[in-house]
Image: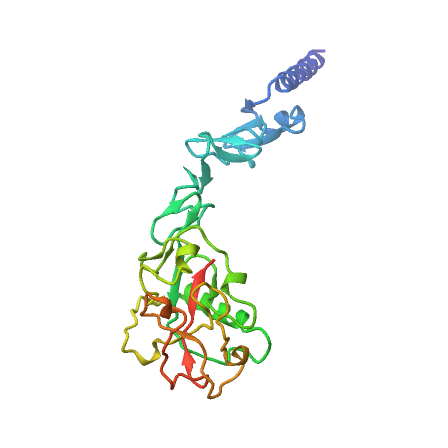
Length: 293
């Protein structure tokens, strides 16, 4: 008879525990997860830490945000299963709440670092450089010289861990920087942060604030360097030079003379050299200008 009374008491105790758990959205119980789980209905989740099991809502619990035992950093709260910054206008970047409109390490989006620490309205200054490597004027045997030229730019940028994606300042036929580039309102700067132009309008005005004479390896090209020449076929305003001269769409290596730029110049000569060396023909190798998009 005494055994029966003990069994009834145990069942009553279990029922009471379940009832208590069901009435609380975040209950910790030391007796293990099985009792909590019995009264932890969806969308609640059982989370266990040490010997304590908790029935909680991981969409809003800052100690179990998204997943059990994922603790939100100081200054953040759990919202929709993610640690979000409590302050308006801030974004959680690797545990730090920042303003991506002005943070030079997280400009526009988390992890986008500005090379010159200048972030305005969520945009970094655009990086420009002249390549370290010289390339044959016959960039391609097909109809598209831009894909290989852009690839060359990005290869050199990535080798020096420069931010962003790059396109070559190059024209062929009706396709030119004016038609295929992002015309940025942000400044254009060298790899060391030196200002080249205030924006696209300034870049295509015919006058630069500083020559694009610095390579990704931070080598400054001098006016006496024979290989300072840059293949462009681009007019100062960013359109195709008139008349065009581009080694037959950058496909041939012959004695014809392309429109080239001088990376040591700040006048229109930087992209369309008025009096190039007559020996600078399509049979030679040239550098490229690369501009971040």
